[in-house]
Amino acid sequence: MCCFSGKVDVVADTNIFARAAKDHRQFLVYGMSFKSGADVAMILPIPTPKASAEDAVQFISLKKYDAFFADLHGGFPVPKDKGPNRGKKDGPPPNALVVVEVGDFVASFVPTVKDFDRLDKQFRLPEGVWEKLPQYKEFGFAVFKLKKPEKGQSKVHPMAFEFPRADKKVLFFPTVHIHDGKVSEKAGFDHALFCQVSGDAPLKWEESEALADTFVKVKQTEGIVDGNAHVYRKQMRGTFENKDVLV
Figure 1 (tube, rainbow, N blue to C red):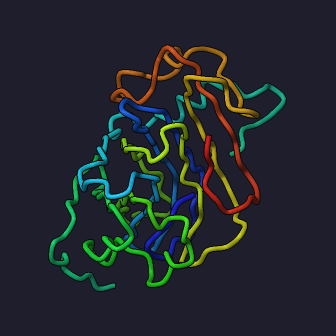
Figure 2: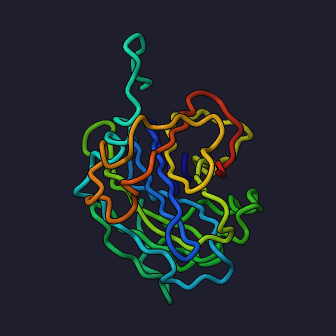
């Protein structure tokens, strides 16, 4: 799942897509539905190279392609005998990081943990959380502000960006759970992970029946999806070790 700066009541139907981009970079698309009583920020740790520039992450708007993940699932038909699984705000701090509009969101790239002090408090996790997660000491962070749903649970349009990878051989899926500042060894997952790879297919992942351009509107993905390649899917529903997924 992801990390939230405040309390969320429900997070479900999480979908993540990853593909290598040029110059040792990676595309990442994240979608979900959530329920919260307040505005919160979603924080995605990403393994960027040390000392990455503040403009190292390129945010991509998929507001006009809300059906991105629905179309990806369409490449994996469901067998006929089975159904689908389905406060007060402070002003910006001095030397604030750039916040950009990306579709229905505002977003920022935070180069290091210490740079969170350069964002409004609503974008941050509670004090001491990152000390419990030393594996993210050298990571950067993509941060998206989510508005409180007007009624009930809200499904947001996909959040997409491209970032430089610290390890050019690995596709990274941010699946660690941090809710209300708490980190547990195991967590409940309701995830579908998708990827496209140039080499061997990842083990134990489903392969789409056809090339991506037969079930995805490739032009609307802004270069994220390769229409001439198959898509692979891994569904994680249930309780798993609370960690990120690498391919």
